[in-house]
Image (cartoon, rainbow, N blue to C red):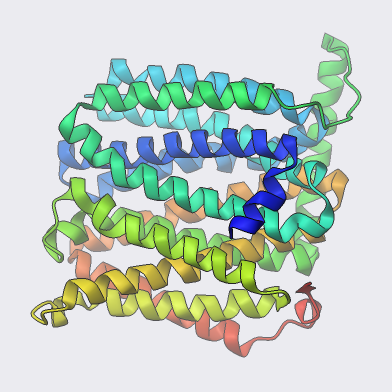
Length: 418
């Protein structure tokens, strides 16, 4: 893994993007988990926690396809810089509304709206700043960074809130977005799009063209199996993660007997280590089938989640905590392999001109997947118990994993990374 990092981070622009990515993602994960805990403390309702994910998903539903088209039309570096600055100011608004659930949800909506334009530009930038033969290594670094950021953010958010205060955590997140802005702004220009002067006439024409391109992009992506299939698997993975995160405070408190603020170190941190392990395993493979890697990993994720859900049946066993930790590590490893494989497939199978559209629509699906299923799972948890909700989630994922193992799409069968 160290060789992979060294081989990819030697590209100066990617090194700067990597700094921007890790700082903004640590801020994102810290803020998300802190607000989940904060709203849970205010309401003691699993369903109310899911409102955080709904507020995050709505901008994607409304602007998802448009954001990708806009990313393809404007300079990627400028988009990344301006959106980071806007996120800095949006986070500061939390100082005003921190004790108002509706106000918190409105700020989450605003941050998610800004991020909706950041994500397609970030993902579409990668093939422009690293060679094609380094894409697998690059995506391994990106996913490792994402999981490392999740591990750090979710592990320290609760303790910071407990030892210092929510205000200090908000300030730290705002400062991290400023660092991310500096990193992006210091990149050499890598996007050679022609910069057009904006007037009322050109703006009206651009809006018309963006709408036309958006309508044309969606059916094309749906018809291209090599793009649509990995996009759906990536979406399914995020749906599982969103539901898992929603259940964690109540499942940890009621089944694992862990205080909600320590869910990060106890559960999220081991899953993050598993994600790093999954990235390391893929990095060691010189040649692998993207499809087989995704399909087998879904089975691993489903099996480990089901066994983790049954903790109440073996909690009296003296090694029960160790077993549950190992299961969460396996869950993280399988999840990371799904993400890395699917993301690489999208990079390789999308054209340079359409990459922003692909990742704009992908981001829309991911945000929908993290909110709608999570709301349903949260409702089941409140109506029955976190245990039954976790069992339902693992059974659904098991059925999906088994279906993938049986199904062998001809269009993907020969997709390999060397």
